[in-house]
Image (cartoon, rainbow, N blue to C red; front, side, top):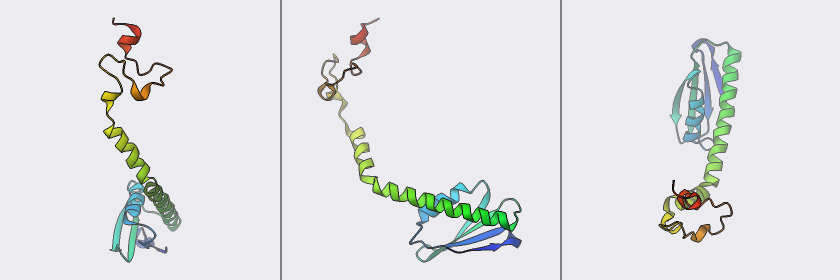
Length: 136
């Protein structure tokens, strides 16, 4: 990952390998910087992606270099997020599936007496308010 400072244009350019950083990772990292800089993407998404970061304010070379360093750190952050998301995909789908397709009619009957899966309810959380405290 190399970068080139174009001080006269208040810009720093970074070349990225799309086999290491996906386009989604690059978009995520770019989004973090939209308040401080203008970002431009160029290149072939299959071979090389070029990111040009142009400061919204005039910046000395040191600040541009620091901005490039922060951008590279953010790329790592989003690459890790992407990896974790891929690793946890099945468990997330399972949890969401259970939440969306759970038949709540089996939990409590009309009178609140049928608890089936909630029979172990030592705090009485599954008992309706009216049954627990009487109607008022």
